[in-house]
Amino acid sequence: MDPLTELINTLYQLVIGVRPQDEDTMIKKHSRCLEKLGDVSLPLSSKVWRHIIQRSASRELGAPGLVHQFASADIDIALGLFQECLRGLKAQIRTHKCIKTSAHLFLERAPLFNYAVKRALAEAGQYGRVKLFNQVIRITTATTTYQTVSDLDQADLTTLRLSILKATIENLLKLSTKSEPADSVVVALVNNVEASTVSNASILCGPVLNEQGVKDTEHTARDFFQKRVTDMRLMAQHRYRVNIQSAQEWKELFTHLGRASVSVELLSNKPQKSVKVTLDNLGNCNKGPAFIFYNCARLSILLKEFDLKVQQGTYPDLPALDQIDFSLLKQPEEWELLYVYILQYPHMVQSCIKGVELGNVNPQHLVTFLSNLSSVFSIYYRRVRILVAPREHLFACIHTRIYLLKALQVVFHNALGILNIAPVKEM
Image 1: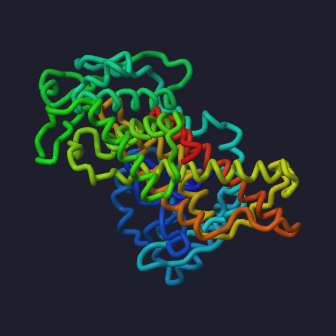
Image 2 (image 1 turned 45 degrees about the vertical axis):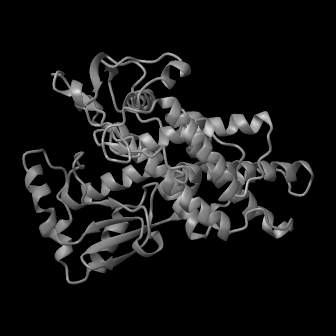
Image 3 (image 1 turned 30 degrees about the vertical axis):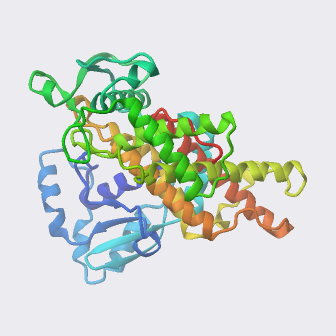
């Protein structure tokens, strides 16, 4: 069990005497303003816990919960008691503070840096695997499936969205199914017309709309791909100042980026909801996917530059991971990248696919995750110089940051891989 899940389960056990159920969300993991709000928070009023305690009354309780401590005149004493009870966990509480009616917990950072970076680098391409299902879940479609890229190019945009959604769900299932499932279940992926004819669990794929807000029946997938290839080239030239030449490798790069942009765009909303796209307005570039790809390339180039400096003798070789002192990472973005995007990446994967057997999937969480990760990394990249002057007293911090960024690259590449997008290494 990862440290964050262990901590939250133990907190529930301490507060109400039982482990949480899936729908319990009283204890929250934060994803922004960590310096101000802390990493985890829980309500301090015993009244707001009442419904969980009442629901749990029918289950066998463990030790009596400490929720009554919240009525104490000195909340700090109550929270100090919690902190003492949590000793021995991988995730330790460094400090706490009360904000209005909630306790906000700030975790010890160095041990979690050490845990998450080591795990991400050790598991590499398998990082993010969460064993949710004991059965094989097969996704079927009544709509024609396409075996080749050229066939898919002729599809209408709604069929294109359905095809991309199916491939993404299947990739998520590969990460979420145990190695030896006992049985299987079939879930249908359907469009609006087919939905009424399906009796078992189904996932609804909403239509792709044009600028007028009606289903696009005029354009093909090929039209959409070509428009986004042009958009990616224009974005690289004018927004990111990329010096584009006429070489074949640039043509291949923008073809890849254009197709990848389409996948991100069509999965940016809940599957059952429609997606509006613009093809005819040449001035409308889809900026979100370009920003993701640009920052993926930034990260790759930075790590490649570090390796080059090592080869040239400017920097010493990267030491073994066990020799790294993660307490050197003190920038707020470093903790946010670790806590929200590396440590919680498996949680995000789980949130995308949990409930698929009932027809509930949320691949849009993956797109949001990549977009937010890119934003935080972009701020960090601009604000903090990673490859500083080659001075001996700075090498330890450089090496620690490089390990953090290597783990972040694992997450970046794995998340793109779920979307069947090859990572962008230069731009």
